[in-house]
Length: 101
Image (cartoon, rainbow, N blue to C red; front, side, top):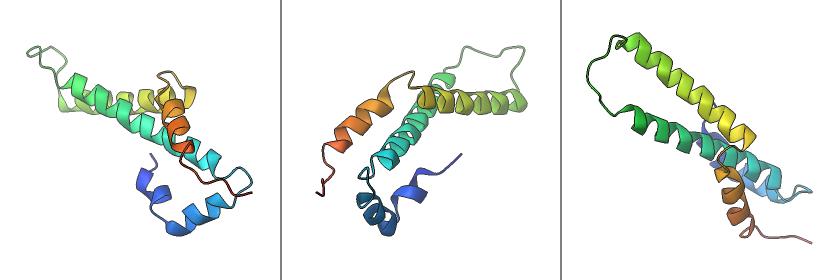
């Protein structure tokens, strides 16, 4: 899992991306996909917090497995665009990017 802050916090990376031929659009798309993955993971984690009582398969190992399963699902969903959040986020943020000509 790649932390979002690693690519977004460095000012040098931002200025270098604005000088790229695509104006940083690829980096914006990648950041939007990472954000979508984080958002989907949080949605799944909130859904898993619902308690329907003790089940036969309740254990710490099962909880860890479900968390890993949710992380993988969120990553795949963001890469395939299953929910479409990343493309919407990218389109909205791209409107605010300065165009150097």
